[in-house]
Length: 262
Image 1: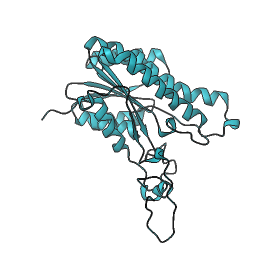
Image 2 (image 1 turned 135 degrees about the horizontal axis):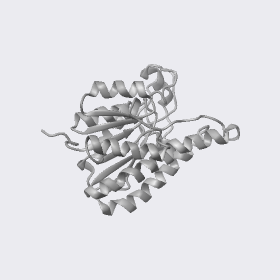
Image 3 (image 1 turned 45 degrees about the vertical axis):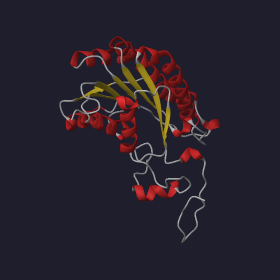
């Protein structure tokens, strides 16, 4: 049977590791030609090589419009215009609001927000010319509720949420669907900075309905759903992949007793 993305060309930013890597691997397994766009050259080249001929690594600073234009040309030369864009690249800079420096605030916005906008601005015209395309903007649960100490990151994800809605309105009637994914705590370099085992990290998630940290592959499967025709009637949708984190459920931890939602 043909894969869900058979014959399509996908660009995945932040594809060298974490959610981006998991997404690139799954897309390739489902028949797509995948461009892994990232600044991490060694890691990205290794992932592309392990996927095989259906993957290409392209080094890019997503906040640079000229580099986006070069990526679009390289993609078109290799496989044709992109059919799918997953705006997954992102950075985080934890800091209390009063301690946050302007340069750090702007750097987070450039990569997380401006980078996603530039990706759409550059690749959507080719999708419109084809009459079909899918954009998946990877936001964050911090774009659904506030997070202490993450001023810049939260601001970027709330803004990306808003841009996703506007893009859905502007592109949907032209055949290009735009949807957003909101991961919660995920076992990636960003979500597991101390490289703890998942079972150890999960102790911090007893206050949500699914009491564990998520895995990158769980986000990748939702990205695949939105990229494929399985979600053909979805445009402007928001899907939380957060273990129920943003439900706001508090589960008390009782030593010696099961942790259950009450």
